[in-house]
Amino acid sequence: MSEYASFREFYPFYLSEHANRHCRRLHFVGSSLVLATVVVALITAQVRWLWLAPVFGYGFAWIGHFLFEKNRPATFRHPFYSFAGDWVMYVDILRGRVRL
Image (cartoon, rainbow, N blue to C red; front, side):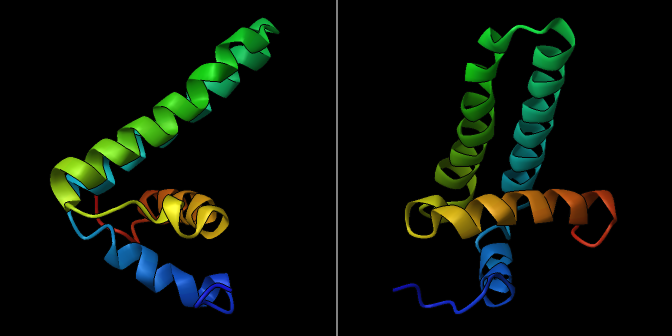
């Protein structure tokens, strides 16, 4: 059972696991590349591009965690909340709520 009853409870923990600016930047770049990959796949109608989405999304994020944050990504313990957290943090960065 998860120690978090809701995503609302989880998100502050998620942000604390992303205190390092370089880690957040790598998350942002990876998520942006995921969106670009999906757009390219849709525009070209070639699903073969989609294999790159998890490589970009998780690859950039995990590099940020292992090299800069020095922690284990939340994906390993809370995969669904972590996935949602990536996108909420992405939007929060765009809105200026989380500093890049």
